Structure formats: C-alpha cells, structure tokens
Amino acid sequence: MAFDKLELRDIEVWDGNFAAAQAMRQVQIDVVAAYPITPSTPIVEGYAKFLADGYIEGEFVMVESEHAAMSGCIGASAAGGRVATATSSQGFALMVETLYQASGMRLPIVLNVVNRALAAPLNVNGDHSDMYLGRDSGWIQFDAYNAQEAYDLNFIAFKVAEDHSVRLPAMVHQDGFLTSHTAQGVKTITDDAAYNFVGEFKPMNDMLDLDHPVTHGVQAEEDWHFEHKARQHRDLMLNVVPRIHEAFDAFEKLTGRKYNMVEQYNMDDAEIAVVCMGSSVETACEVAQELRDQGIKVGVVGIRVIRPFPFKEVIDALKDLKAIGALDRSSPNGAPGMLFNEIAGALFNTDTKAALSGYVYGLGGRDLTKEHLRDLFKELKVNADAGKVTTQLQQFIGVRGPKLAFL
Amino acid sequence: MAEQGWDEFEIGAMLRSFNGEAKDVALTLQEDRDYSSNNSFTASVADWRIEKPVFNKDYCIDCQFCWVYCPDISIISRDKKMIGIDMDHCKGCGICVEVCPTNPKSLLMYSEQTDEEQALAAWPSKDEGEK
Image (tube, rainbow over all chains, first blue to last red; front, side, top):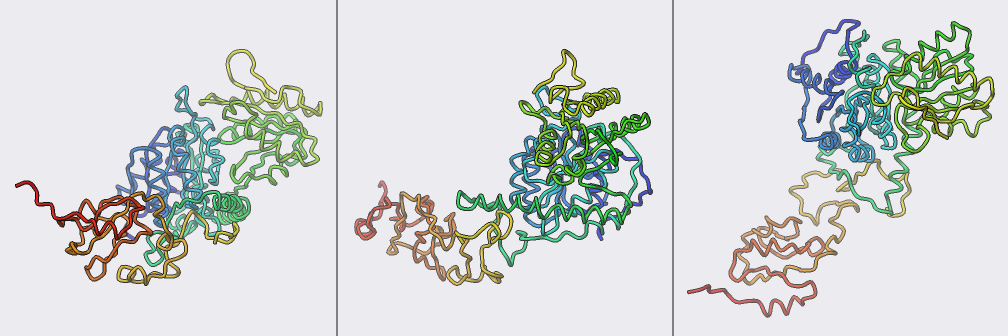
C-alpha cells in the first residue's frame, strides 16, 4: 500500500476528537470534504495531518462552508468512495439541507458530530441541540459517552452504514469539550485489525462505474416521492437494527468491548432510573452507585442509538420501573423534551405503572453536577413511593433564577 | 414503472441511463443505444419551448458550430453533415442561431406556431451590409 501504518500502544491517551481522527485514519477514507468548526476542528485537523504525513491515501477537500462540505461528501460518495467528515453546531445546522440529500440518496457517509449548543446566544460549549436537530434527517445516530466510545463507534458506524442492505449515512456523536477535549486512556485496535473489521469499501450504483451510467439525485414529485421516503424509513426500521447488532457482536469479539442499543447500568432490580445521553451517563452512573450503596434501588439508562430509536429495548429497560426521569440536554422550545416524548410513546401501550417526568438540563455547556443528580433521584424516589409524578412534568435544572417548571 | 410499489425499485434517488451494460457508448449512435425508460432520450422534454429554430439547408456549410454549441445535444449530425433538429429535446434557447456563421443564417428562430414551409419560403436574403 502507498501509505505508512502507525504503531499504536495498547492504550493511548487521546481525547474524543483525536480518537475519532485515528479511527478515520484506520478505515482509510477516500474523500474527506471539511469545513472545521469548534469543537470538532481537531478531528479534521488530525485527519489532514495524517494525510499530509503519508498515513492515508485519500483526498482532503477544502470547501467554503459546511453546506459545501456535506455536498462534497455526497458527490464523492455517489462517485463510489468511502467518505466521512466532522462538524458541530452552526455548521451542522448549515449542513441540514444536505443531510436529507445524503440519506435520501442512500449514501453511506459517516459524520462525526461533536455536540455543541445552537445560537443565539452564540456558544461553543456542549449540549445536544445539534444532535436533536438531526434526528428526523434519515441518518443513523450513534452516541458516544467518552473518548473510547467515540473511537469504537466510528468503526461500527462505517460497517453498518456501508452494508448494502442499509446504505444509509451515520452520525457518531460525542459531547463538545467534555468528551472531545478531555484526554483519557483509549484502548486501541491495530491498523490492520481496524481496517479488516470495517472491510474494503464496496461501491453500489457508483457514478465511476462507466459501464453502468447512473443519474444520482433525481426529482420525484407526488407520483414517486412517497414511495422513496417510505422505503428509506422501512430500511431504517427493519434493516439497520440487525446490522447494528451484528456489528456490536463482531466488535465485542474483536475487542471485548460490548455495546448495546440501550445501555443499562445497575438496572437489574432498579425501581427508579434516569435516561440520558452523552457524558451525563457517566456522571449519573457514579451517583447511582452512591445511592445503591445507601440501599436505594436506582439505575441509569443510556440511549446508544438515537435513530433508529430503540423502541422495544426502551420498553424492556423501563417498563418495570416505578419512576423514570428523562433528561434532555436541548431546549424543546414549546414541547416536552425528545427523550420524554419518545419514552412516553414507547411505554404508552404497555401496562407499565412507571411515573415519567422530564428534565431539561445542561444547555450551552452548563454542568450537570452530582448534586443535581442526587436531588433528581430523590425527587424520582418520591414519585416512585407516591405511584405518580408529584412535580410538574417538565422541569429545568441548573438554571439561575426562579424555578422553571411546566405541564 | 408508474405503478410500481415502494419495494419494486432500486434504492436511492438514482436512475439508470441504459438497460444493462453500456459498452462503447461513445461510438454508438443515439438511435442504436439501449436507453432505459428512465432516460430522457425517450421522453419529450421540450414542453416549455416558445420559440423554435428552423433549419434551412440551402445555406448550411456543415461547419458543425451549432452541433458543438447546442447545450441539449439536439442538433442531429451524421458524418459531419447537419441533418436537422431533435425537437423532442430542443428548448429553443437560440444558441445555434447565434453561432451560425453563414449569410444569411442557416438557422433562424421563429415562434413555436410558425409553419416551417412558410418560414423557409420567406427566408431573408444575403445581408450585403453597408457600403
């Protein structure tokens, strides 16, 4: 091969960004079109340095905006290459139009999204507003809670997205700064093992197949649009989940690290639990363990795959609880939070007696402290004992000023 | 094709130009190519033309300028001889008329409804210019 390999130690000290860049190097992407934005900048910087130093055989395309970055990725993917990029926040928002193009055109692009708040007011810190903005775009969405998972989930994302029964783009999310800029020990995979796990890119209907000319990105009005969208949704609902399970299993065989659609911590005999995503999961796990030590049966549920939403797994994890707190790190702006809604929708037709309440927290990088979580679990315990939600259904936590609660 | 269900087409907003493999397409005349039903070669895409070019072969010198410049590949030329216009694909942009170098021009724009025989009968004569 025309590029050099890197000898990695078994455990390297990487932050989430560098872990993602290393994964992008190891899968040997053909084209990265990127417009760097805080806090995801070091991902494409790191990738570009690997390319400049001869560790990658590919093309790095500098563009004039995130809209152009994803457009370039779409063109390269339709041409028949392995394609990825990274973005955050405002850049993600500018990409949104093209995100729908990528999924509708069934192009298996991998997008590392380092989650960050959306302006106004302008803010570079981590919350889940951009992640939530992407949830109807037809992409598969994986959520990493730490740098290790940001590394691992990249390989899984490529493997699932590029499968010919899937052919849908995938996002790998990690929390801005809390994960992206926090150096941790990351267990590595060798270059050969990592590449072999994902496998050689197998093109499908590629424009560079000159013997089978194709037109990508066609127009379809009321006579065809619905069939295309229905097919896409159907494949997300039915084809993706088995491929994710296969990829999780294969990854566990390779590394010993086990991933699940819904991650459960201390849930075996739990009576109350919080459901959250990102780095908050690890904080919640620490607090839950403290409370366990005091004899309170609490657990934590982390959503690993946001789209396709793990409806059945959420029911299995939550239906026998007495009280559930859904933690949304994005302002729903006029509705209950996304997690509250999805969980309520999943549990509504079951015979669960769980009391479900929603919390909005951590906007613009505001810390979710262990003290917040202790209070929250206490409140959920009251709900569990009362057999109903004793507060309003939606509460803001960690915000200054008079208490905000709704519904 | 119009009645196909969601499970009866290939995924992606993607259409094939030809049925099966397309070998030596560049060396195959359009009428001999195995275009798929999705290819616009088999459909009229000239609905919005309001002016049409009329070709007068009495003045044509077969320079091929119109063939080269036509953005819709609608000038039909065989063995370097201009033989007509593909009115199923011509959008009436008038570029062929602009680039035609003969005097008088061998291509002129007329309204879509103009009778071609009448247009040819009333073709302008050579412009002598100012002396």
